[in-house]
Amino acid sequence: MEQRLLVTGASGRVGSLIRHHLRRPGRELRLLDLTPPPGLDADAETFLAGSVTDPEAMAAACKEVDLVVHLGGHASERTWNDIVDTNIHGTYVVLEAARRHEVRRVLLASDAGPPGPPDPDIRLGGSWGGPGWEVGRPW
Image: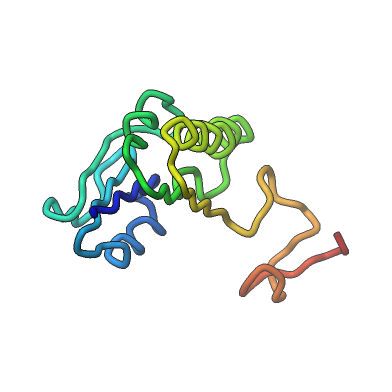
């Protein structure tokens, strides 16, 4: 039985790092992103050009998929409108396409920070949230 995995944001930092770990005999990797990922292995991977915000692209990508690994979205600071459109609405589009195609499992990834502009009370220099962060006041 062949297993089909869809990875959104496959050309991004995390997607590029985990692709080779997801490859297995009998497993098809579908890679969705706006641009092809570096080092695409045409024998083990299929690239699908598309956006997580496009319901038609997501519906086509989710057909007969066993697992969606959702990594698509902006990983760096953007305007609130960009975050809402891509990260929030895009996640809704991914989940809705997976639901409609009866995908049994979806793995969602996120960063440790809240969306939106940075909190002025969080400043560099301490240990909160990883190297170089400090909380200036309690949450």
